[in-house]
Structure formats: C-alpha cells, structure tokens
Image (tube, rainbow, N blue to C red):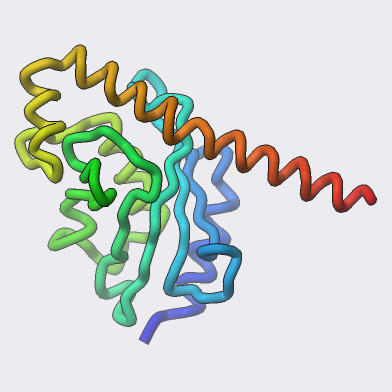
Length: 171
C-alpha cells in the first residue's frame, strides 16, 4: 500500500528547495492521484542540456518506498542512457540499487546527474551511445539541438502559465 503521508512529505520537501536544486515534482495533470506524478529537472550547467527543463513521468508502485519509482522522460532527450524513442532511463537506483532510504528528490537529482555524466558503456540507446563514443562533437550538437527543440519550449510554457495565473489573481 502506497505510503501517502511519506509521498506528501517528499513532495513538499522537494518543491521547497526547487530553486536551489533545479528539481520539482507536481501531481500529474494537477490531479489528486499521488501514485502518478510529474517531475521536472533543469539541464545541468556546462552540458548540452543547459537551459532546458525536462519533464519526467513518475509512477509510484503500491510498494513504494520499498519498490523503486518508475520514471521515464516525457521530454525528448538525446543521451546514451535515455531512450530517444520512449524516454526509458537506464539508472541503477531506479532498478536493483533502489533503497527505501532514497526519496523522489534523490532519484530526480540522480537523473539530473546522469545528464552530466553519461555511461555510454551501459546504454539505454545504443545508437546514441555509439555516437557519443565515435563522434562526440556530433553527439554534443545533436544533444544541444534536442534541448533547444524539446526542452526550452517547456520553460516558456511554464512562464506563460505563471503569468496567466498571476493575471487571473489580479482580476
């Protein structure tokens, strides 16, 4: 059975530090289902993902926190450890290295760190991994292009929604 109080506490804690950590979590589509969340991470500085905001679908199994959350990128990203097709993430703490001591915030921070430190020898996407290893400059250019195309528009959408919301409050 999902530990609702723990999930609520994790959401509050993660979002309190969002400006500092660059990670946040919201209920999926503004709903009330605590087992389906949307995470956001900022692209790390000095990487081809810098300036991007990446959305991640988070599904919590009934056994959470004793079972790892299921996470996959909603935002398309060009990275050896993330599927360019479906956003699946190859990261040990989302599989066999999960521990109940970890939180959604630490999982998102680990995904964010993965953007900075790809592991092309343990790829989720073999095509991207081969490009990373054999033609690194093209990999960097492609990753930047995908960030510009798919991850920067989200930032604008979020800002537009905030402005509209603030405008409604003023009316």
